[in-house]
Length: 225
Image (cartoon, rainbow, N blue to C red; front, side, top):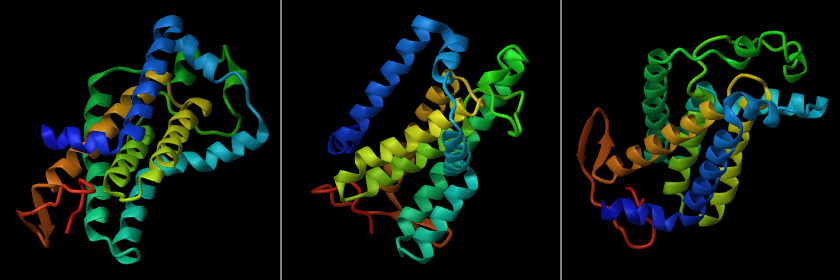
């Protein structure tokens, strides 16, 4: 528990920002409800934003997380980071799929039908079911959390938070998810990222086996290696 507090304390900017975003999202949901919150966040569309979010939303795709892990492993030469990026994506993805199949949750396109056509971008393939929670948002926040906890440069906390937040908003902007979907997705991602780093502080991955890992908690919590 002390180690967990230290992890959060050393990355106070990132986690404080997360808390503010969660509180703002919950407030919006309480005041407006899920459907109205979607319409409020999805009111304005611009062609240049359409093109931007159609591309940027792929940052939350599983393929992006895997490619990032490969880059860290072979090019950046940071194997621990590579494994934790992959494991956080895998763990968060499994949790998301379990939750998706526990709840019947229609996507915005199915929920609204053709009533609010202007809120949906033409030419996009819309899914109709398994809206809750957002898998793209989960992946984005899982990866961002791992990278933040492993980074010695704490100046990257706000950029990483903003990058993950943009993925979350892209899911609402593109009409694929409700606000509640991205909020819970972000929460799952953050928990998965913290969990993977927390476990890695006790074990070091070597080949296909684990052995105890001695960590130096002075300076950065995640001085792995």
